[in-house]
Length: 214
Image (cartoon, rainbow, N blue to C red; front, side):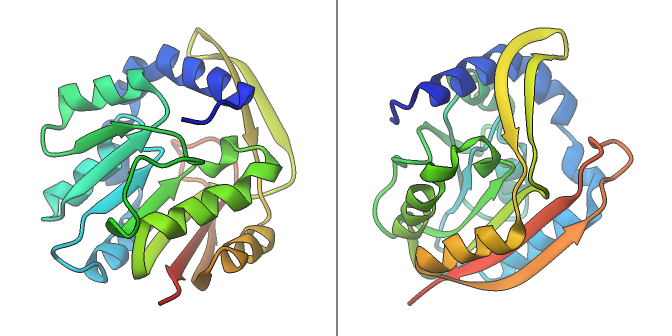
C-alpha cells in the first residue's frame, strides 16, 4: 500500500461516498455506448484464460460487465468501502484492496487491464511509477485501457453528494499521458476523445488503448 498522504485522503473520501456511488453508478455502462465498445474491443483481444484487472474499480460495476461477458475479472481499489460495496453486489468479481503504486498482483498476472478515471487522483510525479506497475502486472502484449478528463485544470471537491470529502481531480493532456505510457514500456494503439454524455459531468473525456511490449 502506498503511504502518500494524498492517497489517505482519496481512500477516506471514497470510503465516505462508497455506498451512494455504488447505487448511482450501478448501471452507468448501459448508458455509455462508446465505452462499451472499447471494453468489448479489449475483451475480444484478451486470451480466454487470462483474467482482466479493473484498477481503481470502485464498486466493481465495470469488472462485473466483463464477468457478464464471460471473462474472469479482478477489481483492485484503494478504498475498503468501495470493495465492500462491490462484494455485496457482484459475486462473480474477485476484489483486492491495493494502491496503483504497489499493485497486489503477480508479475504478468493479467491478460489486460482497465483504469477508468483512476489516474486523475495521482500526483504528477506518481504517474510514471503507476504505469510501470501496470506494465509489471500485465502479460507481454497485454492491453491497457485508460480514461481521464482532458485538460490542464485541477478540480477540488470538499463535498460530494452531501458527504464531506477531500479530493483533487487532475485533468490530463492525452499526448503527455501517451508519452508516459511509452516510457513505461507500452505502445499506444488508439487515442479517442468524446464529449460528455448528458448524465455525466461536463468534461471532455480522453481514452488511450496501449499494449505492453512483448
